[in-house]
Length: 172
Image 1 (tube, rainbow, N blue to C red):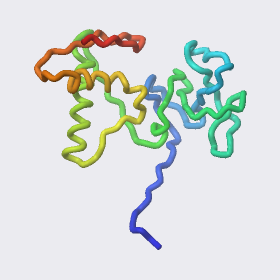
Image 2: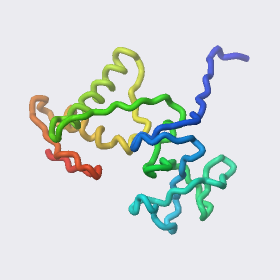
Image 3: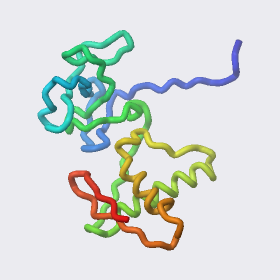
Image 4: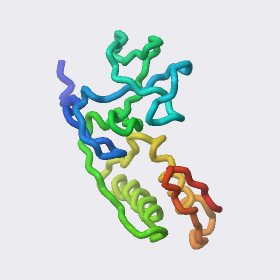
């Protein structure tokens, strides 16, 4: 019995570009991120868990590290930063925002993202969602500060300069 719904399966792409370093690589080079706490840290990311090229898998197809712990998180073979799983299937593109220091790039990105969330829902009846909410937490925090953090919509808000290491401190 047919329900009339057409199913289009997403396929894993054979070549990817890292969303962090933009390095191109084939999907068979993707690293897994170990979940084992007793393995040494990654050589490229001393504060991160070990990255490894998977060779063994469990019955569900999830990579196993050297301690037989399932490791579902993926990483770039070049920079070793985490890659969201949807990145393997969805078409994507890069958009660079360039500007002088303190020219408003972070403000612009948060405002643009906020507006896309509203416009996509209202005008196109579709959601604009994050494939990796953890990696985009900073943008979400900015959106909250700028657009929902105050009862007074005319109150000026400020954020500290974005640290090149990725850490920020929000200023009320």
